[in-house]
Length: 234
Image 1 (cartoon, rainbow, N blue to C red):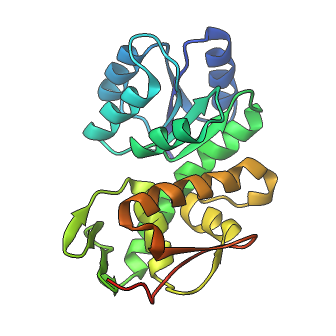
Image 2: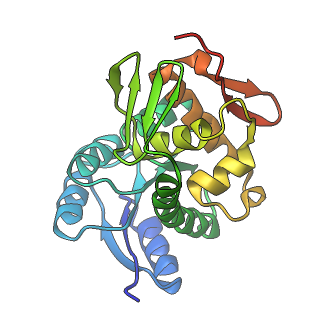
């Protein structure tokens, strides 16, 4: 089996080399970039299966790198940020990042997140194959096969992870899905309890998803998780 390729984009050479060394030890083929333009060029020349991407980079920042890479070919992205600022995180998710870690981080957590992102891609294909082609809840229509969403007849653009999250919720309207279950089914986390910050990834994606499909459609059950509200009026 061909090893999966990971592109590490980090301007701090010590951190970049440490990440690359650990990922190679786990069996990944690792590419390294140290600035924004170099990352975009390398991603175009040697497409990766996962990108580990720092936000603060020379040339242009990680958000712009993510935007340019995703415009060419969708790929799972784990963003590394020095700030645990919600607005900064939402910007990253909005340009197509799938997950994020705040510095300082543990190498084993990066490895776990990379593995989870690879499982998410496989799980997304499985979920789509199991779901009916088109599902409707009120004026929300989710086409699993075409990966398209409409609200009140208007198309809504979602990132791949936002779509997978919505698909998971729409398959069981009004059923409360725990954060742990969402982490398992959408992100591929085998052991969500291993990282408390992982559940915050779910919360951030739900917030971004609400901004696109309507806040009233996704109900929060405090301390438990989320549910798609089937009774939401169009």
